Image (cartoon, rainbow, N blue to C red; front, side, top):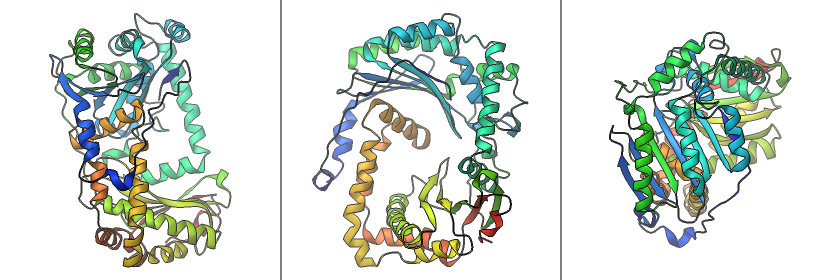
Length: 453
């Protein structure tokens, strides 16, 4: 990810909500839907505006649909390198001038690349929006793409690869990808890896820059204290910068469903020593499935059990919990960090899973877990960057910018019976049917001492 930040800014809109009385129906949706406006440029590029009245910060995002499925494995990280280079100087703003502007103003320009899309972005104080947009637009449309900068970026990537290979947690992530994405488009990484480091050329980057500028794969998101008049003015600016981007014939890549396949996979990282880093990958409902939030709540119950039984009672690990592997469809992950128990760790985990609370206990604690979950939802929308991230996820995975506004109501709609059902369908089989795909990383002489076969 390329990022340059010229000052530390901490301006937050603090949202205080009483979960016990607020979520009858969908008041969060009702309170926020009026702050959205959707417009478009003459070439069809959509522009989503979200008013954030209590913040002086404006978050601007340029979303490029596509992701890793567009590239062969030996071009892993091509989008990331392309955006790094694009944001390292343009015809109007050489990098030295970007830095000079940074000393005078407070803003950050960055990019990120993932499985399904890439984002180029900036955050700035709203009064500086026009100047920062001019710099950003020239970086996107007229980057210098110089050989010397490319060589430096690839040198930085080589160093990053070595750091990942010497970090057990990062190696675990690489081993997870090998285990679950073999033969799948996601086998191509969003980051430069050992296979692509010497395969990506400056010519690849220049060609990729041309391909990225396709109106059919671009969307804009703007979050700030923006009224109707300001929206129309910004649309005019965006039209002047990006209205010439033509439809390039982009076709959304076909991404098959990913399923966890039962088995044990072992990798080594000498820095882990005798300690184990373990992940159990399993199938879960997708984000738009009616069962998803019931599953998420069931996982919260399980997290507390795993912590109590595996860490506190048995002192077998430093930390343990559940999470999600993202993408077009989701997979669940049970993550173990710094395990010291080898022979019996799997049994400890499975026995803990079997200790899921009784129906009565699930019902008794459900409100507590719902409130905890809803609090996390609101924490992700307390500032312009968080709001923009929610909008992008909604656009990419639901096709509607406002979909995230429904999440709190969907959580509140979950009944205790739904939680129990989700546990029995998705979590209990890890213990009773041994259905997870286990991935273990430790030192080369100790990895297979962790008995997950």
